[in-house]
Length: 84
Image (cartoon, rainbow, N blue to C red; front, top):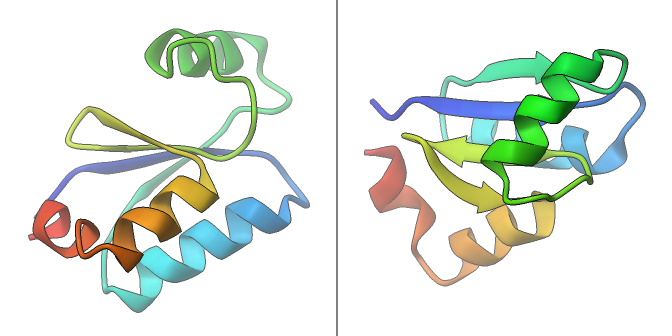
């Protein structure tokens, strides 16, 4: 199964929505609470090419983007192959 990492912040509806889609797909993921942790935020920004919004999602080290990017990937049929 794919290694999924998702950088999140508390009370973020986009984070909730992204995690819900992954759960619906039966995908296990590692949640990295980064909003209150400067080192984790810096790590996220470096890995995500400067992206500073939440969530930021990585599948097997590949930067997927945020919630909308994850849903768009799923809509065009690209998410399931990455999760396999």
